[in-house]
Image (tube, rainbow, N blue to C red; front, side, top):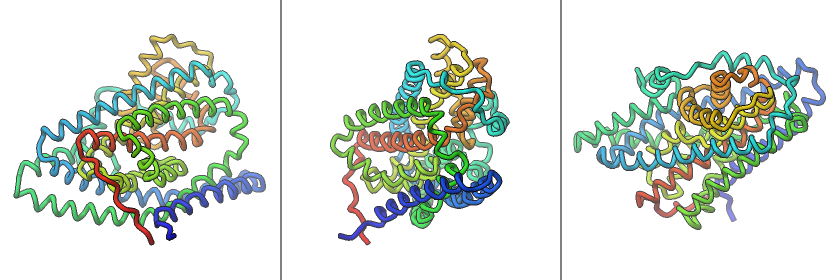
Length: 420
């Protein structure tokens, strides 16, 4: 039986993960600190190449597919109805994620097991430098673009979504005169999706570079010291998956298993590269193959990347309260619930920043008189936590897109698998 091209790429990604762990660990054991640092910097260039290739196609993909999707939806009423259903899912899922993180960090108290001597001060200073105090002005500036070209250049997806919605609604309002634009952008979107297939061939190299670099630098010993913290976090991720998949089963029924199989490759890439952006183009194509209409996928998925990062949301309350526990700071229930609401807002204010979850945690700690430099305590284990929360983000957005498609009566049968 012939293996599909998708299955072959998944196999290569798994091999790259194993090789990355092996090579990274050998370097960690045998090389000097200077050689380890040099190796990590150089091997991570493979990941940088892959991520930059992905980032290259994100902005044009979001713009073309979203405009075409909105134009096909037809009118403001349809856009508002689909968007309303999506936002209802996003807000509910985000609150559930934050509450799970808050409940489990209070139950396990992982921060009490973290030694203040283990802090990564240098990385913490870099993150604190990126932190900005949340304000209404910062939030508005992050959401509404002053230039679509600036938004595209910096991959500010939320700003690009705002522009694309206006452009799509305006195109739809032109009627037949706008059809030429729709056809041109539809053709461009298909060209970009073809490019996505070429870019994904570099995924195994990106995965190898990311895994090898972090294992060479941290080694496997990091798990022994931070075992309780990581264990409690993984319990939280497991609870979140159970919740998401249970709701997904209620909506999709037996097709839930089919969906998970369809997005298995994006999940692997997200897990190994810790980048949600890295799988955005591939996730778009897989959801369309699963049976979601392109007009729904192109509208919901970009919104989800700004409003529906379930794994990251759970981690924010978990990490913020763990840092407070490490410093022996007691926060009553009312303060913790206030922190939860603040995190809902701050996460939207600086979502485009690299390692955004940690930047949000840093800003939130400062607001609640928790030493922001405490972020240094969790940085050594953060990469491994990031692998799981990024994969969870992908699951959450895939479920949101398919659920809205089902509610809109726009979920068709899966496309037949391609064999090569």
